[in-house]
Image 1 (tube, helix red, strand yellow):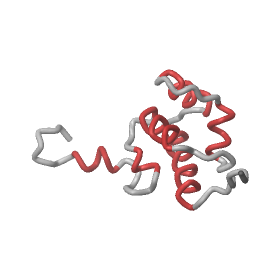
Image 2 (spheres, rainbow, N blue to C red; image 1 turned 135 degrees about the vertical axis):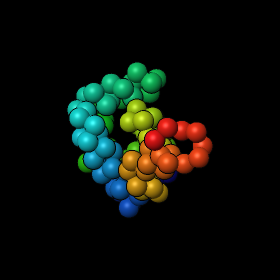
Image 3 (spheres, rainbow, N blue to C red; image 1 turned 90 degrees about the horizontal axis):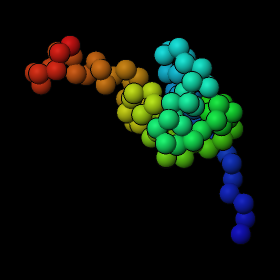
Length: 100
């Protein structure tokens, strides 16, 4: 059986960039974010996170979901399906009883 290619596609590169941007916007080091991910039950070292952010390591779906949880965002934001921060903005000013 041939080894699986490590090439990262456009969605993986977009997710890697978004993780780095959101992490730095929140003032978190790679070590701090990796610690949050580990505390949520998914062991991750800061070097593993660094490799994900540099698109040198595939970010599997489990990594993606738990990193999103650690950043307090939807996994769809990391996939570029909605703008960063849109979750909070979308709730403001709605009639759903959520304070804005």
